[in-house]
Length: 418
Ligand code: UD1
Image 1: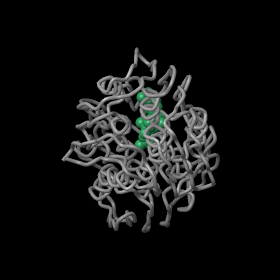
Image 2 (image 1 turned 135 degrees about the vertical axis):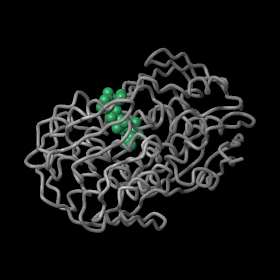
Image 3 (image 1 turned 180 degrees about the vertical axis):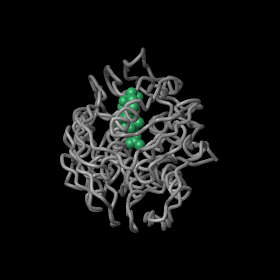
């Protein structure tokens, strides 16, 4: 059942409550491994990537109990250090276990992570930073890594070449129980980094500067358990906004932090949508008469997110005028382009640049999703297209969206899994 039938949808209307953020839940769940007591993580989205993280925690010896969106984890007796190749291969975020397991067990054995194919996704900055903190990599061959830490990680000053989200998180996970102080220069500033630091601070970690480009962590001897609610998912929120902008209608998002999607709201207003935002709701009204977006350049937070690039490219296919996309974060994140062309879009893409000239209408076709956000972009484009479309690769959606079809159906979308 990994195909979706998507029919032309006249408009989206109603309210939708936004799920917890995948990119917060994954590092926070990983971080529970470092705690000596029980942690309760609330608002944890029901996603296949979350299940993989929980499976890894269980395989390391943690006790895991999931009740809908609440997960209880007791890692006090976790004592294993090996993660199977099949689990590592399921998602990129599994690499966060490198810092966490090495910190807790003093050694770790794992394979290179899998995940959406957005071009090469090396982990050299993770390894370099953790090595500076005392990680000894004794085997890094055939996709396998075996590493040891003498007693404890040591605090260090790390200068990241770019503000990598995953590398920042891995360093934080290694640093909270390290000997001495760690400074991360050029740290990622995403809200999900702040959420991870909020969680760890509640557990007793000493962290300052989360959300800024320099984070300072003073290692403590032990972390206790806590209860923590995951922040709302800004990319899921962006997906509903992009869909409404493109398909037309009037949709109110609830349980979000509008500040996290400020740049998205600004662009939606510029292209002709009405957007009313309060602290934790956003309402969008669209009559589908959209203007081109000009230049859209993906950047680290608070810039335009790479995870929203495909969604906004979908919008630009039917917006009046020319939009130019520059993908600065990932080298190969235009896999949705060929599929949008099948719907009748006018896109010229070369290397990191894509030029989109809006067309009058799209027409349904058979589409193939190749990554999570690309899949969502194809769905919203297919909803706008005349006729019906069939999308294969719909399993990608389950990695990041809870109840994808039913949430869209409630708003009036004609979409079903076949
Ligand atoms: C995270 C998000 C992903 C988002 C991305 C950028 C999670 C689970 N995933 O991915 O949704 O699209 O941030 O906002 O939170 N790089 C290296 N060497 C490294 C690490 C990164 O060259 O050791 C490069 C990457 O190839 C990429 C860039 O740095 O070109 C940014 O990657 P990074 O911020 O690390 O992304 P992820 O943490 O993988």
